[in-house]
Length: 111
Image 1: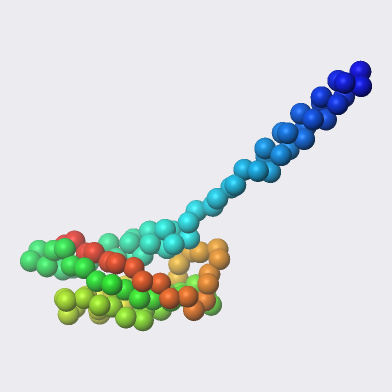
Image 2: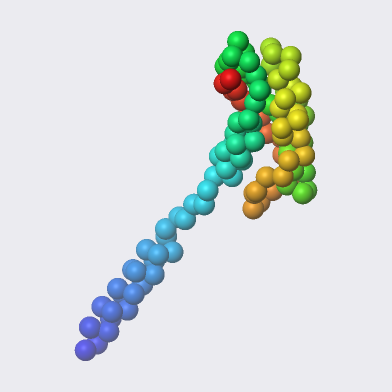
């Protein structure tokens, strides 16, 4: 009987250890942010001759979880105004907002 209770306790410890050892990772916040930005930039009115426009967008998040565009580097002149109009001060859904952290993402627009 004593051996049986010892085996049961050992099995419970192993089961508890396995449950606690699982590293539960949530959704990657940077990937979530990129997905939200991609949805914001889908509606564009660029002509067919301006297909495959690229830019590097630097932005930060304020305390309210809003995007603040810092700079847009692109060869296409209208890209900066387009990105700023679509993204500046738009709220994003993030659970853990790091205020002031500067993000840089590549943006590619296909007309």
